[in-house]
Length: 562
Image (cartoon, rainbow, N blue to C red; front, side, top):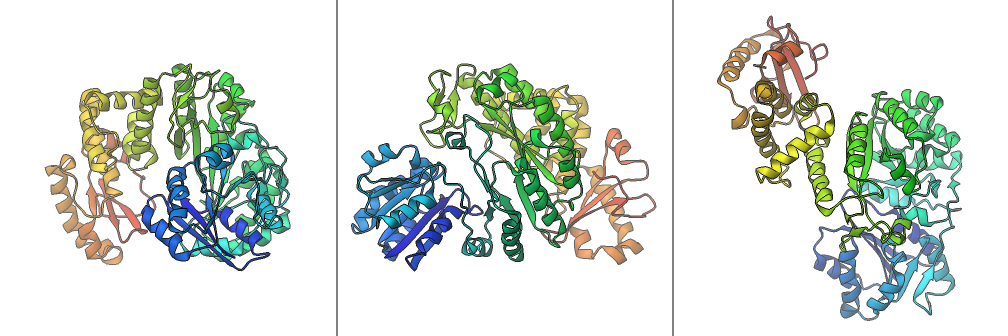
């Protein structure tokens, strides 16, 4: 038999290890097995034609919330191009809606629900003859986690992010998560197995390895051995973990503190700081400890941290949401993701949607529209807040400017609400994330809301632009005759200096952006011994900035960082 296993990812960088897990099982009996991954941006007929040209005996489709709309067309069209294909579908999106898909899509031959590896083993035992179309692999089958060398070889070669599992199961019972519907038995690979598998992955030299364990630090003995391992390798690979701050102690912080800089990334899902909201979604934890430990993680300053918050949870009104927003934002993580509740079929919260008066979109990923506590307009407003949080803060393209503006307000939400209100009143485009569009309108916003700070904001915007610019030009709303004159003066002096001859090639100096602060505040901030900065880029990876000293003494390592 000839098998074709198809995944459709939301982005090219993403990958689908589940298909390779299933392939490992199929290889016990068959040899003609192909795995292919597309993205939701791939043209539909390109995928349909690919399947038609391969003409498999068995087609297996991996279904998730991000690709189910796409998959539904395949369900209907596959038998049109080849009626002999046995069509098997599986994945979370069909597992909890199997009866619906069975009735609506008669061309689907088999629907796999539950654990995919076990369901595939059962298919082999039954010779793919499933009487009722639905085969259930169960939820408890965590005692075996496949490892596919082929998955890692191909994923890294294709430039995608490889996902790794050191454990299965989840110790928590969050009512909005699909894992909350499963038996909570935890299974951990042995430290020896993890080391052996990581050795294989590390030798492939991926840029990033993403651990998909629900909470990396829940088993301290195993997590410490993993941290010791990645601390000891000679590599620039970064490892991504999901960390639960409530379960950290001083020994964990000591391990994390000793890691080489940027060796890991930490995702920290706080979701809310309101105890009533957390209790309603089965997250019974001491929020004071969560916030304190998250702050301690941030203050380590040796790896990237990512905090999460969810809008639309039960008992969360505007006051509760604003308080959570401020408390999580003020922790100072590198990235603060403001997300929105997805009401997923099969979760506890979906079963209580009427109790909570939840209305959500019929379109995947079933995002919340309104609740008993938040109106549609209020949730829409939070979506606008999220656009600006993403554009101005998480993008890291306005770091100097936003840091200063946040300092003008008592609470972070006050700044984001003011700029959001301005965008709404002026009918500006929230979906336009171009730096020049945002920067130009930010100046207009400052003129109206913080007019006494305009000269400072322009200085900081020039610094932010200079870090991104590919040439020496400023956008028209940031140009200055004074800065242009000073640039020409210093360009000539630098060109003749020993520093230029030793450090900066002429072609880079010509492309460099000169930033000469004109506001008294920024001049004071950078120090009396610094006139300004030179920003220049040799290539996409190599970026430099140097302080301009009155006496033309330059040091890339000993000047105040803008």
